[in-house]
Length: 152
Image 1 (cartoon, rainbow, N blue to C red):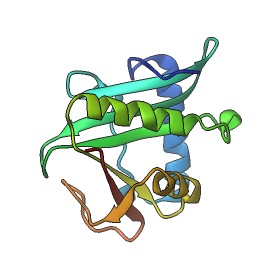
Image 2: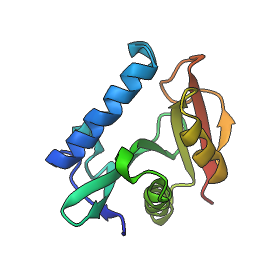
Image 3: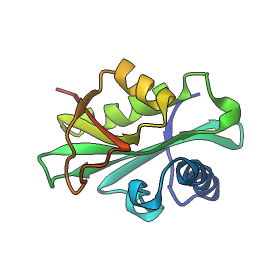
Image 4: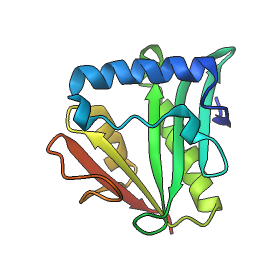
């Protein structure tokens, strides 16, 4: 499977986002959830990719180019269908998003995730992301982990 650009408002992408939101809502209070609307993950300021198993979308992720706290890309909406986890699909999504940023000359990738997601935290750390303070419009939140990775 190879990540390909898709419209984040595709019905199957929206269905995966709804699954992600249900999980995040179960794990965190509303003030700790930062759901990016699908419409804001479209070009030209964002890039959204998916992985397909035949006609079924099984993994998604997006990145928005930001300039509110330096030039960086913010990773958003990475999610893998539970039936497809453990196959390295999130690594493929992350590589596609980081590759897109690097191709655009963006020197840094950042993300926010939660403390109750050990698999995500392990993945991001294994990919070279390091903890940092809140960035952009985020405030300190004891349930959030802020991370970044140099792409230079």
